Image (tube, rainbow, N blue to C red; front, top):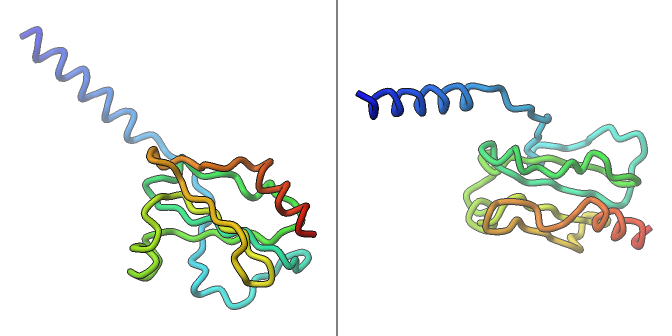
Length: 126
């Protein structure tokens, strides 16, 4: 009986945690973006690619300055893209459409770069 009560308590705790809402950001599939209205059109773009199940490991790239920001979900990408990137999140820095830097997540699916490091690269490219 004691084991049953412990098991029920654990299951109830798991259900309560899993039902809590997760804060999400708008994420766009960049394959379908033709023109995005930015306050200024910068030559540098940051692309943040992640998966729905890994949203909690997003890097808040919206805080970066003097660059365009694009978001994409792995689930929305073609099979070739999903096979190319096995470690997420992926953060790419592009200048005039050409990728210059690519940071992939680690084995725990966490970012391997900080906002400060990305901003430093943006500032150097300006």
